[in-house]
Length: 357
Ligand code: HEC
Ligand code: HEC
Ligand code: HEC
Ligand code: HEC
Ligand code: HEC
Ligand code: HEC
Ligand code: HEC
Image 1: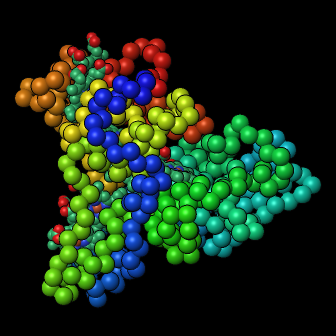
Image 2 (image 1 turned 120 degrees about the vertical axis):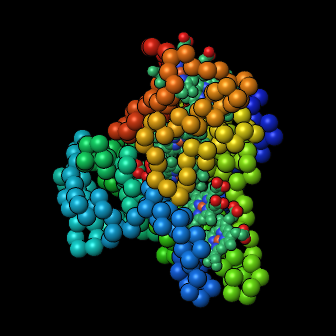
Image 3 (image 1 turned 90 degrees about the vertical axis):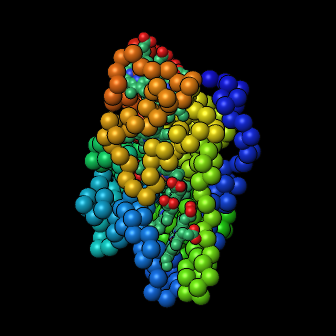
């Protein structure tokens, strides 16, 4: 698929870069949103539905503190061997210690942050001499153990420190923390002591201090509306972390690995229409609730367009009237991830097709 084809379905696309979006989505970091701002008022006082469910979602656990990390607690000793390097992650009280040896020298460091709830995998970030590193090994749920971190598969380490992890540049670390945590600082200036692991309300909605304070003074202040009713607006909003069409289309060719970037995949689908709310991310997903894994529950979303009286240009299926996604959104294994992603490029899947990039 060339960049030009989907562009025709993407009228008026704002030319924003991912980092600009990250900064735009990044809230102004008011304190205490979860609890104390505005006296005893909390989001839960008035938004019980969102406040009771959102904290249980994988997005709310996109990062976990090592002290509370379920995977590290339930796997007190993890080991892995790659070439001459032996890896261990060992629980010691509330900490987990990551060590690597080549048989002669030893490297050992407490894990700083656990990234990802581990539905696919979990990667660790540690600090060494003021620099941040991404662990060369990750935990994968499907194998209940360690394997090489995805980006590390084709890279041979030159020394013990490289065998332990990849040094992350300033921009790389900033993006990593802003996508997986809240209140981690502003732009490239990270404040890792202040962060809240995972995504909280303000990470998506922006600062809520005035909204809360307004109820005390009797002069309510509205929150910014995130949804303007078009598919493209949400696609770009969610794409700040799930990656935008632009970012993937203009970046290096990834092949099958681009299946994890849903905003890109769905934009390339014939179903996509920038202005139509029925193909917006939030038509199918409630960001305050865990992902619905029942295929049949998505039928009504497809039928909203593919039916008599639906969208005039959308055809009807001659093969089946239910479980649409089971055939038209195939699960695609991503090399090295031990995980199958649901391909958002909705299409007729032909036998022996090559993956449409
Ligand atoms: C005292 C009750 C109260 C509290 C506490 C409260 N809200 Fe609200 N909130 C409201 C009301 C009423 C509305 C609808 C009117 C409006 O938009 O101002 C609203 C609207 C919203 C909206 C809707 C924006 C849209 O898309 O229409 C968001 C988002 C929101 N609140 C987030 C929060 C968050 C986050 C917190 C906690 C930091 C919070 N609220 C705390 C009463 C409250
Ligand atoms: C600030 C970054 C960020 C934004 C904005 C964001 N996401 Fe996510 N999302 C993540 C991360 C990180 C994960 C991976 C969580 C994990 O499993 O560790 C995730 C996971 C998910 C999942 C998988 C959850 C599961 O149950 O497996 C869904 C669905 C999802 N996001 C939908 C959305 C939608 C829809 C939007 C826009 C309304 C959105 N996200 C916006 C960062 C973000
Ligand atoms: C631009 C935003 C962004 C950046 C930067 C980013 N991630 Fe993610 N990450 C996501 C989203 C969205 C997901 C969920 C979809 C997926 O699995 O690709 C995710 C998924 C993951 C997962 C799998 C989670 C699970 O529960 O299965 C791990 C592990 C992870 N990221 C670690 C990292 C680490 C470590 C860094 C920094 C080196 C990083 N990510 C940088 C957005 C980001
Ligand atoms: C991953 C991003 C994300 C997170 C985290 C998030 N929200 Fe939302 N929220 C959204 C989006 C997107 C909408 C717009 C959805 C819509 O209009 O249907 C929304 C809408 C809302 C609304 C308006 C609902 C309505 O029916 O009009 C409220 C209230 C709200 N959120 C409260 C919260 C609270 C409270 C939290 C934290 C417990 C929270 N949100 C966390 C993305 C998020
Ligand atoms: C027409 C419905 C539909 C729309 C629109 C849609 N999704 Fe999905 N999405 C699904 C289905 C179906 C699944 C798979 C659920 C399951 O695991 O059974 C899914 C899964 C996901 C996952 C989990 C990871 C994976 O690939 O398995 C993420 C993250 C996600 N969607 C993000 C998004 C984002 C971001 C958007 C907007 C760009 C979006 N989705 C738009 C139907 C939709
Ligand atoms: C916003 C309206 C809309 C929604 C929602 C929507 N589609 Fe479509 N879809 C279209 C349009 C328009 C076309 C192009 C005309 C056609 O082939 O029907 C299309 C095309 C298709 C095609 C043919 C693609 C090809 O490769 O030729 C399939 C299959 C399909 N849609 C399945 C689905 C499924 C399954 C869902 C739900 C997961 C869905 N659609 C949701 C509007 C939509
Ligand atoms: C058992 C697998 C299966 C299921 C379930 C399924 N389809 Fe299909 N669908 C197909 C196949 C195969 C074709 C291609 C038929 C052909 O070209 O002869 C197709 C074709 C289509 C087309 C293109 C029609 C055209 O004339 O261009 C659309 C649109 C579509 N399906 C939508 C849907 C929707 C919406 C649902 C759920 C209500 C659904 N499908 C359920 C297998 C399935």
